[in-house]
Each structure stands twice: as C-alpha cells, then as structure tokens.
Length: 179
Ligand code: PNS
View 1 (cartoon, rainbow, N blue to C red):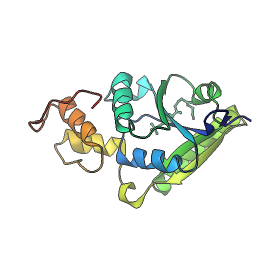
View 2 (view 1 turned 45 degrees about the vertical axis):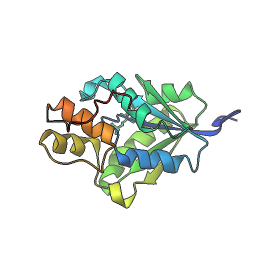
View 3 (view 1 turned 180 degrees about the vertical axis):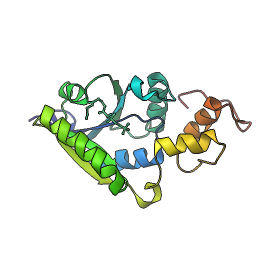
View 4 (view 1 turned 60 degrees about the vertical axis):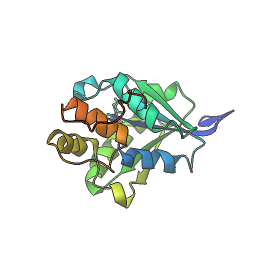
C-alpha cells in the first residue's frame, strides 16, 4: 500500500525551506514520528526565495539537528513537491500550523498539491505553545539585528546565524557545520 514502506511502515514528508531549522520544526518532526514510522524532512531548494543558507548548509544543519532521531530522514528537492513525494513511498505531507494567519497559505498549498495529486493528503499539526511565535523569517531578522534567538533554534543554528551576520561568536571550540 502506498504510504506504507515495507520496511519502514507509514511514511510522511515534512517539506519546508528550513532557512534555518527552528525548534518549532523539530517539535513537528518529533511529534510526527509519534504518528508515522518515518518522517522525511524535505528541504526545498527554492532559490527564488533567496534563502540565507544554501541548500547544502541547510542540509548539514538539519541533519545535525536530527542526528539522534533515527527515523527522521533528511533530503532536499528541486521543483514541485508532488513530484518529489511521488518518488518516495509517502502519501501524507506533514505541515505545522502556528496561527490562523498561516491557514490561508497552507490551505492554498494543500489544495494545490491535492489537485496535482489526488492521492496526497496534507496533515496539519498545531505548533506547540512554546514555539507558536517562532518562524525562520523572524529568527533571521532578530539574529541579524543582534537579538537573542537562543532557546528558539538549536545552538548550532545560533552559531551559524552569527557567522552569517558577522556577529561575534562566543569563544568556544570551533564547531563544524555538522556538529
Ligand atoms: O517553509 P516554507 O517556505 O513555508 O515551505 C514551503 C514549501 C517549500 C513547502 C513550498 O514552497 C513548496 O512545496 N515548494 C515546492 C514547489 C511546489 O511544489 N509548489 C507548489 C505548491 S503550492
């Protein structure tokens, strides 16, 4: 049955820009794994969105952030999400919803994806109350202006943001992209 991987059980795709990954995303991945046996975190290349981090940088950060979550698989894709999903064994797209303001965009996207592939469903999970105000966009803005984003994104992401914005990085062992 599609959506059921013979070896992995039920599979969901969690797509996004992850520019950068936040604890809100990680919360959805972890809660998704309570419903699905495998969650494929699919990073959209989306060059037209002019991401701060290259797709390689995002891949390395996301992989590092979920390295202790065995059933979270990290990948990237170009082009239409439905085409990427078609190459996997998933039939569910997982998305987080923070507030009603997200709804219209998500509703359009889910409806378009469903119209492109009638076998596909989108499952929404409400973001945990601790992260409902966290978005990659606001994280980047706050970090760029020198505000504290600790506790909202993993430490590795805090450091990578500081490096991107050429802000002082606390003296500590230099960590690689994958740490
Ligand atoms: O984290 P984001 O930026 O809200 O994620 C949006 C994403 C990447 C899921 C969406 O832009 C997407 O699916 N892009 C791939 C191109 C595509 O399939 N577009 C049609 C969907 S309406």
